[in-house]
Amino acid sequence: MFRNKNTRTLTVAVNSGFALSGAAVESSSTRSEWDESSWRYPGWRVVIMSALAAMAGFGSVLVYSFGVLLKPLGVEFGWSRATISVAFACASFTLGLCSPVLGLLLDRYGPRRVILPCVAIFGIALGSLAFLSGSLVRFYVTFILIGAVGNATAQMGFARTISTWFSLHRGLALAALMGGSGLGSIAVPVITQGAITAFGWRATYAILGAAPLLIALPLVALFVKERAGTRAVDTARTLPGMEVSAALRVRTFWILAVTLLLTAMSTTGTVTHFTAMLSDKGVDSNQAALGASIVGACGIIGRFVTGWLLDRYFGPRVGMILLFITALSLLLLSYSRTLAECLVAGALLGFSMGGEVDVTPYMLARDFGLRRLSTLYGFTWTAYATAAALGSILLGRAFDATGSYAGLLIQLSFLTLIAGLLMIALPRYPAPQSAENPG
Image 1 (cartoon, helix red, strand yellow):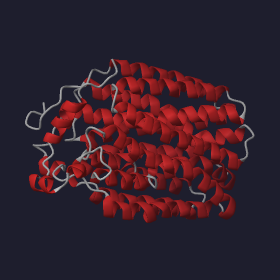
Image 2 (cartoon, helix red, strand yellow):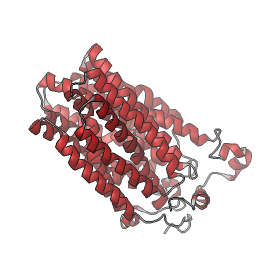
Image 3 (tube, helix red, strand yellow):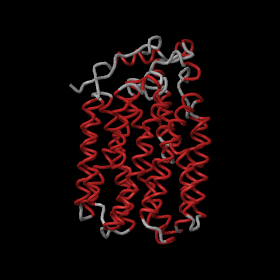
Image 4 (cartoon, helix red, strand yellow):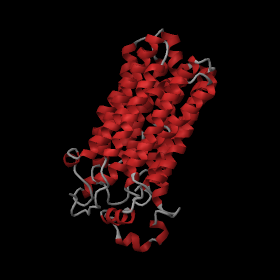
């Protein structure tokens, strides 16, 4: 029931759409250089460098430092958690609005010309928070700017590039990409807390802003490139897949979007408050930061396990199981009283959240092809980011109103359970389409 029986057929169909300038290159290369299962395959180098670049992007640096800096900013300026959470919401809302535009640019112009300026803006804007005054307007405007470019520095910026290199092992390749963000999510909370303790929160923002400029910029400039002949601007009529207008009329797309909306409200919102949740339970700041790192570490495991499963089993069933695990983790977190209980809940949350992020680009590529993958991915990110912003605000308000997150976490657990059930409504994969008959 779960087994994907069309993998080999899909491999042939997708590869037939790749205009590898080609025959000359292929004939002069060894078989292993163009075999996805070989370590010599050049696509794996692109995956590794993309993963390292994403490690310094929005999905790890901003998301996993935000909760650690929540309390220091509140102490410095007397802001409530709901007030500070609005900044993350500003970034998340803007990220959602700008993601389709970034996706269109990525499809049209390729990765470097889009990712490089976005990484530069992201790093400079984040570092500028070191000079933050008590002005909420400036605080919010900076996060709006960060959100506008954020997704080009995260997995969306690299997902289409990697998808052009892989078909048979696309799930594993995307999992490896997400693993870069996972590595960042392990390191960022600990580094952020250590920097705050040693240098203060202002210097910490300067350090965080320098990371994208020193890590991501050179890696993208030197190594991140699409497989030859697969850029939509050059091969719009030869790449297999749907145009955006056609994809938006398909039930599968909207189920994925609604599922992401319900999920992100629960997961990303919880992660931005996770360190504060632990601190509220009497855990010291260093242990709380380590707890957030455990969430990130389990996210890496979840990504690779999910990638392995996606290459072998029906994607919606994999996604459904992950969402059920997420619902369980939120329920456990709402009742957790000790550090050990919180860490178990956080580990389950990280595992399922990390895996669920893999499912969307994989499903989009399988159901709609590569032609407008980044644009469609951008539209799903609109739903994801909007919900993540709302979740962060709601959690902040819940704490300010009641002194606890527990009641809202139970409600979010129920919403995530509904999201998992929605995955049952996704149809089987469509028959592989050739470039000449994209449907």
